[in-house]
Amino acid sequence: MSLLEAEGITRVYGPGCERCRERTGDDAGTNQCPACGSVVACADVELSLAPGEVLGVVGESGSGKSSLASVLALAADGTEGVVDGELRYAGYDGYDGNLLAADYQTRHALRTAHIALVHQHIRDGLDMGFSGGGNVAETLLRAGWRSYEDVRERVRSLFEATEVPVARMDDPVATYSGGMQRRVQLARALATDPGVLVLDEPTTGLDASVQARVLDTVRRLQRERELSAVVVSHDLGVVRLLADRTLVMRHGRVIESGLTDRILEDPHHEYTQTLINSIV
Amino acid sequence: MTEPGRGEPESPTGHRPEAEDTDDGDRTDGPAPASVDAAMEAFGEGGLAGYSYAYLDEHTKREVRRTMLSAVAIPGHQVPYASRPMPLARGWGTGGIQASLSLLGPEDVFKVIDQGSDESVNAANIRRLAADTADVDTTTDTTEADVIQTRHRIPEEVLTDEQVLVLQVPITDPLRTVDPSDAANRRRHAHANYGKMWLRLYESVAQHGEIDIGARYPVMVAGRYLMDPSPIPRWDVPKLDDADALFLFAAGREARIYAVPPHTAVEPLAFEDRGFTVERFDDRPCDVCGSTDTYRTEVDTGDGEVRLVCNDVSFCRKRQQRPGLPTDHHLDDPADAGEGGESA
Image (cartoon, rainbow over all chains, first blue to last red):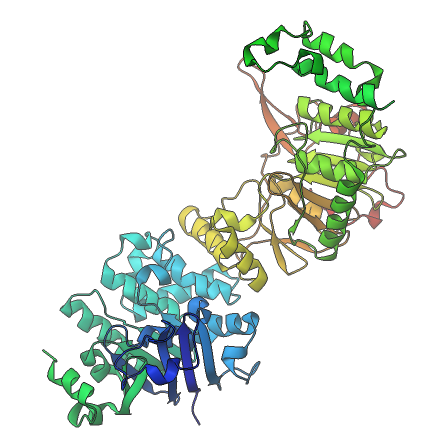
């Protein structure tokens, strides 16, 4: 039984026309419809995520990874453009229909406690006006925690788990280093023990050694807490370290999918082969 | 009397038709009144003739009343209304005046306070506008009033189920202190997502050891909407909870009205282990009446002395006559009073 199931996820920015889908995609070599100019960010994406599994999504810039991620994570901007398809989540008793058709309150409830997103851009995920601890506390407070000491204790333990210095928890998050901000975002996403974690480019903008440490943390937490996660990255190295299975995207379509090891050892699609050969 | 009466209020501006000239420079040559007093005199008795009853036209009053009904139906929710231009600047109680004037009838008794004082210039002028245009009796006694318009205070004497309190509101949305975007804040109200305001409380406890909000303390109304109770001191916040009277909050500049109907739960936002507290006066009584259970403010007398006196002047006067007079002295059965009666 899979925890998260998606079928036919399609997202189109622009007016859209009948021929959008057939004239875009990998065969057409573009994601922009030549007839009406709409951008088909992703189309007909099918995926399923088992409990405790990590699913990787790789592809070059503009292949629709982040668009897909924000749809999967029910992000506030996940409804921009025309979103179509079916998304089901098995971990929430209150609603078992298509999440993409759910009302905003259901989406909000799910976002608060069930499906957490670590944003690609730190500023989308953190409020720079507040302290690092406060940013993590916000998730808890939103979920209804009302005891100050309990919140403090939980934030402290999350800081320890994500290896952010606890002594700095009351400093403004704007004064943190890039790697620390990533970790705070991770702590914030993990605060309410979500069923699914969506990581959008968890290591962009970090230097190699910090990248490695952040990835180590994610890997350890995933093992310890048996997290189910979708990891979106342009970096095959990240996906190789974290993901059990991988989807390869290009021009808004999934062109190849399978076990990560299989994809790395025996890529079938021409583009995947290029991608693997280009690892430095 | 319609036409002459209508023409007269324009005369002090020098815009009389006979004085009209295309050349701007000649405008001052018209027959201008010699002084403000003379101008007021020129209005005479007919100065207000031609105005609608209670200054506002009937459509406006009806719209404001309809908005109030919506506000009462959804406690704590900010309901938009048209908010007409008023004869004073927005931010000076224009919302409160529109609400009061829409409510008042000739039988009503009206009281206006500004930070607990009936005597402030603005309060006196608003009271006079209502007396002149709506033909109401005015009072400074809280217990005698039917409608009380107030800025920044709730009177000390317990309000009854026959009374309406109209509060002037400068800023309607409590969330604006954490996010300046009204669009985002409206979304938060729709989702009942008040995490940001809780975060604000969390941060203030983390930095200062306690919640550092003075006035405008955010409250949850009926367990649903976060509401700005207008800049009343924390001392007055418990009076909103399960009260007998109707509280109307009207903002002129922001064109919003919201309400706390009688017997509605109003809960100040606070942590279980970092509670809501009212102002502390270190048991120093009012220097004038000796009260220890009223909201007191420091007054600098100018000769180096700082006195602590009751902020609610009308009740302080009563206490001077009858020391120890309870705040619910006017109720038949004081035990019947709502939570507001036990604010001390």
